[in-house]
Structure formats: C-alpha cells, structure tokens
Image (cartoon, rainbow, N blue to C red):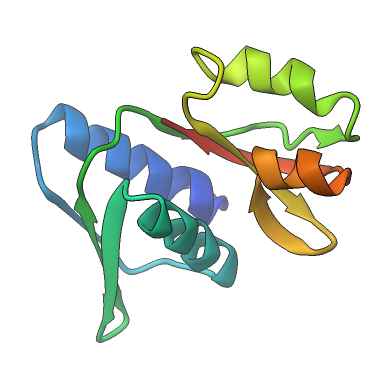
Length: 123
C-alpha cells in the first residue's frame, strides 16, 4: 500500500467490482476519504459505515472510480478540459474538486466559478 489513502481505497473498490464482490473493508481512512465517500453515497453510487475502526463500503451502481494523479490545480476556465479528459460523456459522471469551500462536484465548482485541486472522478 502507498501513502495515498484515497487512491488505495478507490483501487480496492474497483478491484472488488471486478471480482464481483459487494463489500470492501479497509482500516485506513481519512477525513478527505470520508467526505469523498459521503458525496458518492449522496449521489447513489455506494454506501458506507464506520464500525470499530473499520470502514465497510457497500457497492451499488458504480462503473468506474479513480483518483486523479497528479492532483492538477485548475481554474474555472481550465476545468472543462479535465472534465472532457476524465469523463466518458457529457452529463455522465462526476469529477471531485477540492476548493477553498470544501469538496464539491465539478458542476458546483463551475456554478460558483471557483477552481481548486482535482481529487477523483467516478461514473
């Protein structure tokens, strides 16, 4: 395992999906990962629970999720280029942007006209 907890957990989720498993259990988690999973939960892609220093993630309807490395810094104007690079089609999927207002999906970042650092994408 590397030092990037978000990338490791998203890799575990994709490996579990390929192996046709329904849950992923991990002991390493951070506030950034919890906020990212909360966004994915609100959008209906997965569900998660914290139990005894373990994070149990239940997969629902997710096709792909990946961390964006290196974490590009984008402005409101350059965000569209990265959306086209990482998402397969328009209005299909989400790019997570870490801004000074917190984590948000790319739609909200464009609406608020703020940039930030790209964290992950999923669809």
